[in-house]
Image 1 (tube, one colour):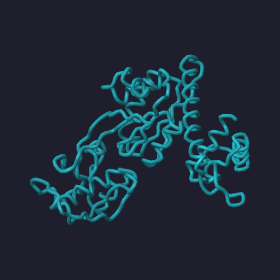
Image 2 (cartoon, rainbow, N blue to C red):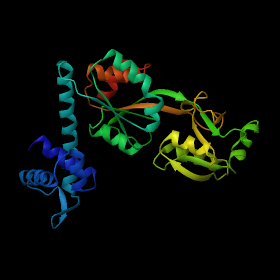
Image 3 (tube, helix red, strand yellow):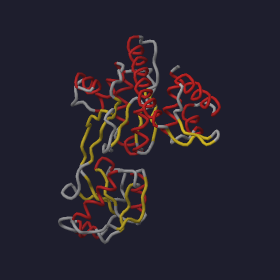
Image 4 (cartoon, helix red, strand yellow):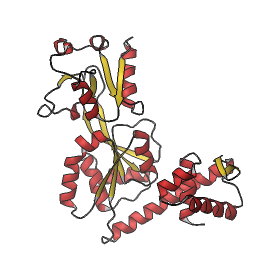
Length: 307
């Protein structure tokens, strides 16, 4: 039994028994993944996956227990490697930040600038993804941390640290009728087409729920994963948008207007996600603290230990 075999079964299970997807994710060939699974099953004398011929179908009931233990072992091995890296300063691996386009564009640049000034020579990789992918990458050790506004339904093996709160605004083109609404109301917004985030983002559902709670149905006409794309669609007259105030810059967004909407919609909260039971190296801990300066290093480490 070895760590490669445990990683293989975990990744295949995560991809719904799809060996091809697991092979791509791990950077290995399909035959290598299949062989590792077979070797582990032979050693344990049990089938981890149900099969139809050579095709994997699903995880067996005994396999569920194996995979649960394997995930913990893989996580612990990564923590040990992180501890070794913390002790040996000569080992410098890239810091991988899983995040959305919006956070990469508006929240992270000043943080990374300060980090790079403090830790010259430590490479930083920004990996874009949808909310579900971002959390999975942290859970599987494919990202050092995640920066996101999403936080609902997180695995309890992930610790979330709040960074910053931003009020909501409604973004419209110049001379839009809503600019004359005093005060802005949901009833005034409802007749106008709404450009918003894709369904994988919880903010979309919260916006819709806010309208529905008031007995209104918003007119969703277009969705995207990037706030800059949404703003461009508003510029083109395709609709209005409810966004975080963090993504609006009057000096750059000259063809848009922002209407304060904090009285209508809850604010957005940027969070840092880190896998629990993970030993952060000194510079990794510093990056988390740069994102969430109100949290002490001790508080972070206690949360990662689960206390």
